[in-house]
Image (cartoon, rainbow, N blue to C red; front, top):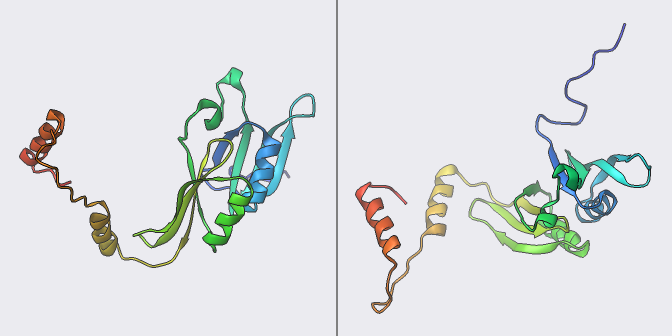
Length: 184
């Protein structure tokens, strides 16, 4: 009798983050130093010298890493000059983890701050062009309180000096919103 094969491998969830990186070995070393990642698997190409794929585990989450393959259109965000992906980590001690990641070479994108939704949070950038949001929950906040704080956070009170011209497009948008009774 053959053993039934699970359609979802052990340890994986329904959705798994897959990241294209410039160099697997360098990426693994960085993620180990910065985020305490555990290397689960590493696969090499035909010549057995260059790693082509790896899986790592950060906390209880598995992340797949693929080496860039320009011929297939697979490039890291850094190689494309963009920052379009963000991985969010909830951590027991964001301040200590933050410092460890910076020591490993991460660059600060958004400094740590106490956010209105109850997290202490910040965003770092790695050498492959991925953004890493790091946070620890510091306060339990009700949905009603989050809504109140959101309005306060994004409320902008600006006085426009009389001698400054307001672009026509801005006035048209403002009038359209007022006419449509759209809440902003």
